[in-house]
Length: 94
Image (tube, rainbow, N blue to C red; front, side):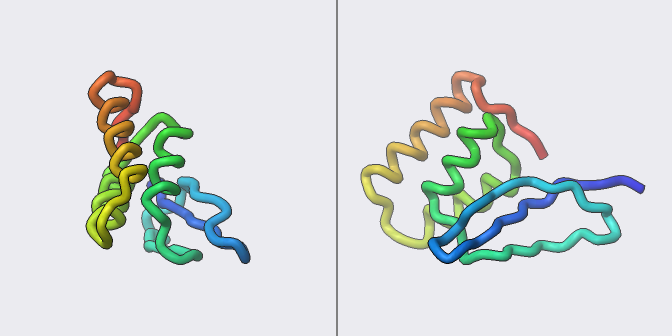
C-alpha cells in the first residue's frame, strides 16, 4: 500500500505546539487540522527548520498572507523564504 505525506498540526492551550508531516495510506487521505489556522510566522518557521517547502506549504503561505495586511516582519520573513529558494537552500517537494 502506498503512502502520502499529510500535514498534521497539533494545538495546545497556548496555540500551535507542533507542525509536521506524517505518512498516511492513500485510503486514509484526509485533511485534518487539529488546531486553529497556523500563522504566517509559524508556517515560515516550519519551512526554514525543515529546509524544504511543499505545495501545501505554498498554499498555506498564500492563504495566511492574503488574510490580512502584512506587517514589516511578515514581509521580511516572506522575503527570507524567497531568498532561500532563490539561492537553492530550500528543497522543493510535493
